[in-house]
Image (cartoon, helix red, strand yellow):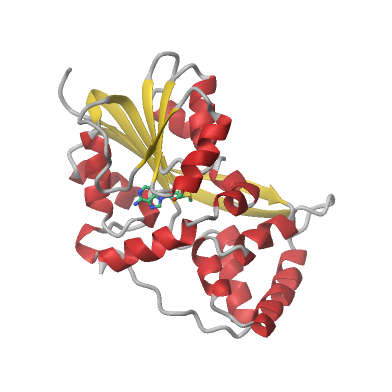
Length: 272
Ligand SMILES: C[S@@+](CC[C@H](N)C(=O)[O-])C[C@H]1O[C@@H](n2cnc3c(N)ncnc32)[C@H](O)[C@@H]1O
């Protein structure tokens, strides 16, 4: 089950770096400063950005003077990060088995990545493995129930009368509840200590056409649904989106909806 889930989630990102950078990357960038704080990023800290995407976290860590290594399963994502971070070290590799040595980093951060793996517990154990004793591991994921921004896609699907295609799920034995306590529990389960888990809330503002372009470009769960519809159904979904999103435009024409993320960080026990 988890292998087909991994394949399905990884396919969502294949050759999508530019579409992601233009659309959903701005949303995922919001909690980056808090995540960097949670894992103690500052000058001289050796940090691993796991599932680096198009490089938001790597760039922010480098701006703080950290020594950055960026890893992603998708080569196009790694290339996009290198473009923003010429001094960083790029690595292609996938959770739950990163091609990196044990205890090689002071801090490891995975921003909206653990929600894309079929076996979250071994994935977080791998984040712990590559972090030195006393170092910090930090992750973000989207919560359930979904916040209003993400629920907009459910409303579009329902309004357009679309049946969701079957999607594989993560391995139940290695999964966790998408709640603050659930994410904190996942970190404790792999032996991290001093775990701090919280909900971060904000209002996301984005050009509504750019936001739709992420879905139309096949990104994330909504992209998976859109990519499996015929042209007439996609047009119906877009019309539903325009109508539903139109209610949430601010005075400058930007889509503006509340959202939230779960952010948790913990310490690798022992001293180095
Ligand atoms: C939602 S994006 C987040 C990207 C980036 N962390 C950010 O904040 O913009 C998820 C990223 O995780 C990567 N990814 C998915 N599954 C992965 C895995 N098993 N191992 C490593 N990276 C993975 C994807 O290629 C994608 O770049």
